[in-house]
Image (cartoon, rainbow over all chains, first blue to last red):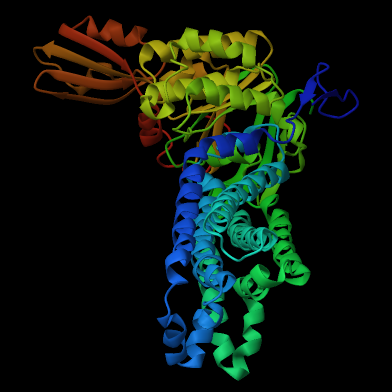
Length: 284
Length: 304
């Protein structure tokens, strides 16, 4: 984008004012991190696919129902095994409520921590800050890189689960798989955006990683433990993980409230952090 | 005020209880090459990062190209070439990729200068930057600061890590930029480095401006160290009466003294004794601080 502004106080010698179009920084970040994005996508998808494939073996076990019935009910519910004998229940318990969100949130925290607070602490952003690009644009472009990276890993999970469901003939609707994967993406995104937002606000990588990981871990524990204690059941509302798994998308499809809540949480913390990011000292 | 490229008045910056800048005053005129001298930790980089809008001053007035950096639109930075004091480069990319990226962030300006400048400094654009030596990394920083022909160059220790030949080349580039109308503001902790190119020099210490003066005057203040090997009976009284000489000592036929300004009288006196070896060395900024500013850490000093 090039424009002349001969009337401003900064216009000297007919100077050419220029600033940058949106997208170059996002492109640069994704290009720089492409190897790690691909490796994570392959790894998370492979683990998810590996467990899903086991349904072929698992569903043949006659003793399965007996095993589950022998466990205390609270434990069964906490582990999400009450539905494990069905294809959707199995896929939910092993992949969508356990391995995929854990791995995706680890990736989201690590990736988000690297592309904003990590880059700032290392000094990688010093020349970006000196370029004719506003801080808001820097934050938005780097935030977009997190969205794209989490999306890429989620798509890889979706593709592999799609192939497994079709390949071994699991009794799960493909529309439900897509809905659950979309929820997985929104959950991973919320953890990534919380990490970016803390980084943008405070400029400390360790703090951003701690808060991002903390929200993921505490959310996971709350979701497992709170329903077991009647008085604490309401606490699950504080857990983004509970919003995601509570939607039960593999059986019920998209839950507008839960998904909207996750998307809204991501957007709210991200855009709110910009208010501090454009004002505070950078790289100190 | 429009003839000033950088204007700072009573600028203060604190980090917690540490005062990095203490009511710093500075005026850099358009078109000049201005040296910003001070020992390590004096606040040079902090001041520069305030000028670049990375930091916000706690108090005081800052204008860079007539604009308050903190309130400046992003496009304002397109008129500035900045070389950070602690240059960090993305190791996975080559210098060429990185410089092209920076040119795109400046709406393409300067991309045509990447190859000529790299050739001039002997920088390999294709190598991944993780494999570049410290000197070669510094070349990347120099190229990106100059390539878009900015109106103002803010260079934080531009020649650090470069060998003497390249230091000269950068000095030449600075002089050329000035001839094209660019204002150059650069920091250093080495007096000899600013000596060749600067018109005026500011000295900063403890976050305060100690003095602004011409390089020649600072050189005179710093003085030269004289070392002579003398035969026969020579004592400290040899230079008595010459105001420009201080710190005379003689031991084991080794005579040392510090000379400020003209050495004519000193040579006359030396001619009266038998000298077998004579050496005159420019003193460095550290020496200037040690002797001249030792007893007055608080600036500004108006008169010498």
